[in-house]
Image (cartoon, rainbow, N blue to C red; front, side):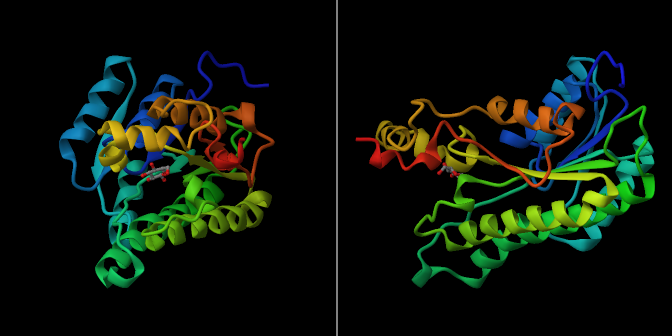
Amino acid sequence: MISKSKRLEGQVALVTGSSSGIGQGIAVALAKDGANVVINFHSDEEGAADTLKEIEKTGGKAIVVKADVSKEKDVEMLFEQAKKEFGRLDILVNNAGVQADASLLEMTMDQWEKVIGINLTGPFLCARAAAKEFVAQGVQENTSRAAGKIIFISSVHDIIPWGGRVNYTTSKGGVMMMMKTLAQELASHKIRVNSISPGAIKTDINKQDWSTEEGKKQMLSQIPYGRIGEPEDIAKVAAWLASDEADYVTGATIYVDGGMVLYPSFSE
Ligand code: BGC
């Protein structure tokens, strides 16, 4: 039994896309639980600085690294920076994700490649880099029961089809099989791999939906629990999943969605 005042004490977490929204919430939550955090951003430098400020306010430690997760060279540099600064890695949260919506008939190669690159290739490159680190490190009992933890931030759209967004749903469906395959492949190395699939969480990605009365009403009609989620709803689950409290959990997808996957239109 490891006795620590904070459940992620002595651990290092890298959170991709942590300059806003869910990623920002997760970075802050992991730091509150005692982890040193690598904040990654691609274009929102100000947002990344806010995440850093928030972490430092609560006495946590973090660094900010700019990298495009869809680019192999950037990802290598990102993990090198993490290692250089903190000397180890325990937790990867594959959070960075985008939408570029268009009907099939109108979808361009740019829209397809952008979403697949960031949402699917990115998690692959980061998981590979993290796993190399975790395997080399092995289990260090005084830090965690696992050699490493990988958490994918997927979406309810890994199982709910969504017209006009075939790039996005394909990427999230792919993330589900990536997670399961890696959970199976890496278990013998004592690496835990899981997904969180958020429903409608109030962030910039869906602002055009929740910022109008009509859009909000439509959103709420899809959520049995009757409220739109907040980044903290996801962050709390991520922190638990990263901790030894979830040591026997691997290969799981946790839907954190107020019941969105329960076919709400069939409720009556
Ligand atoms: C999407 C959001 C959407 C939510 C629920 C997420 O994966 O990025 O735009 O509101 O799923 O449909």
